[in-house]
Image (cartoon, rainbow, N blue to C red):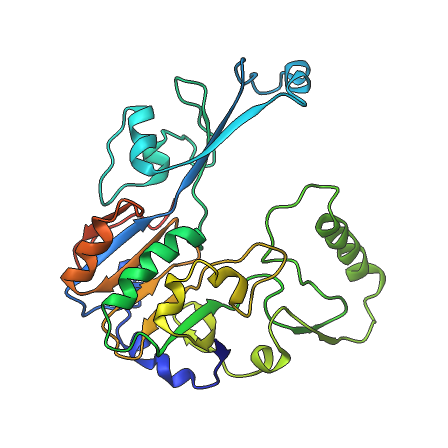
Length: 304
């Protein structure tokens, strides 16, 4: 997999997008079938006790060091836990009864739920999807992948301090990441006349400085990538943007034959695959993937 400056390879996608903020603002029109893949959620609960009420500092302190059960969970199982209905147009905050949507819900059995991650598909789920993608193209060894250029630390920039931390997992307040942000904040005011220099990113300087694929409201770094590569479980360790053990999935994947395209919009907790009815059927019936078929132009939630 290597960076490419041939961003014209993505022109066909731009030509099929709409300006209105709908499904087709980021997923190309013109395919006969579409599948919505739901990003997994996570839940946890303390062993042998309940979660304390918000603000109950003493009880929260008692949880320190206690064993915590944690597991990944699909939207359908979450809907069963909360007594809601799972369907193709589901929104997470309605499935998990979170009001406001930013609230962390707790079900009747004491499980506390974290919302599905937006903008990236779990590596093993993409591997399962990738196996179907490779089987439904005449060009499994030739295609493209694009990654949103806005992920912090991905590309280099002109500035006074580097920021190669954005693709990593969440950090605590005492982490190197938090300390770096605090130091950068001070520098912005204490060193206003410092000369800006090139700050390298995770990707090569060539990929950072070179032409990028411009789509409505989004800029992507483009790579040549064989569609069959995503069926290999080792893909997170081999992509050029892998760092610190946490690798985001591509924002776009398509084969040279253009039989399908996979789109993971950065603000959504679901991924869309546009392609043939056979491909959509294969994805939606795979037990390793939680997905529903949707109609072209389906009115799906564009928020979590």
